[in-house]
Image 1 (cartoon, rainbow, N blue to C red):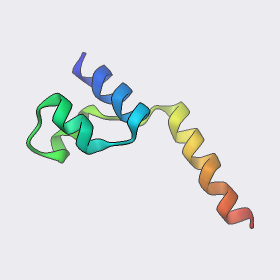
Image 2 (image 1 turned 60 degrees about the vertical axis):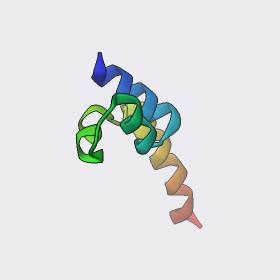
Image 3 (image 1 turned 180 degrees about the horizontal axis):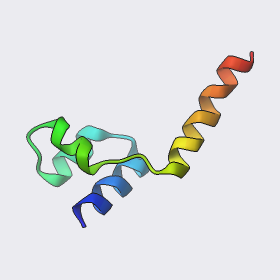
Length: 55
């Protein structure tokens, strides 16, 4: 459940510090274990930055 909450919140907000506070972690390294980027979000990020390289 913590992984789901961390991943969902991180993908919706993009704010690791917020997720860290929400999960009660003292270290962002711990939070990064729980906050994973979904394949859909990763694809969206790749599409966003690929525009930079086409110009």
